[in-house]
Length: 390
Image (cartoon, rainbow, N blue to C red; front, side, top):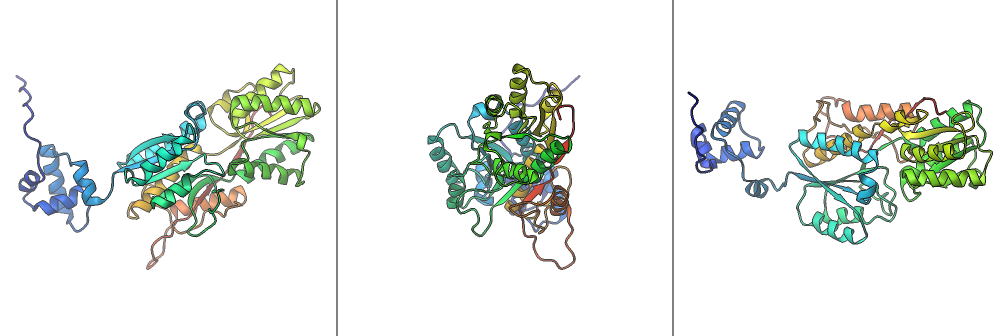
């Protein structure tokens, strides 16, 4: 006969756990709140008592002791329509969420739908509701970095900083891909296939990723000022890519290739090329950027530049967790924490060098007697993936 479950009694207290484990209340508090100075055997006895009694720490009381909320704000400076329609953001959020979950930290998502949202977000960030923030898709005049700085809130950024004052010390911590080298790889590939009238569809040029990809395009062509008719802004959206491709074809009907600075824009560009009767790649070769799932599903499958978006999210979260607690140097996958190696400068180097720097920043070992690790920005590798569109 199966015993009936007992009706729940009073909520177990810290004192009850201490009595059960045969230790002081202060010892239980240190174990529950992650404090140091408790022997391993005693710590295990307290944990067994917590499990046996079903003790759940009071989050408000715990925050008073630890000065921590156990939560991190993820702020995306874009409206919800763009965030939930672009697979880039979903992949980055997946990486962030997995890393924070492994560290028992909650994710609070905040989006910027309109200018008034900045005041709301600023008030929330400065009120002590979160321990830190992850911010990405920032624009040049974005007030969010200044808000985080005024609040004294530890923050890690997605993308190379480009706002006013970002070059002041201490430098902001950020994670990015080597956008400039990725663009160079894309355009050199097109040149190597004999293409000579190569256009580019950029993202908004108030974002550093778009600026860096345009710079890489120019460098690969070997001219600081390419024909302005070959440059169009697609706003990092599918509809924008569709319209930008139409403008390019109207301005330069004999173009034979286009480097599109995101796969989402490339999907729109392909739609326009089909509507105009242009064969891909016979008439116009196309290279995208991101290598998200839709790139392989495109018709024809899209040659693109791969950046590991999910891993970039994980790196952002891991870097912030290390800022909040330097002892937490292990991520969800067991990788070592970051050492003091600077992954790359603001301009970023070649892809292979960038990958090597990123690897050292995540897995480097410090020698005996070395001081505390100095955290640094991380630049990850960009890599061309060749498919049928170019």
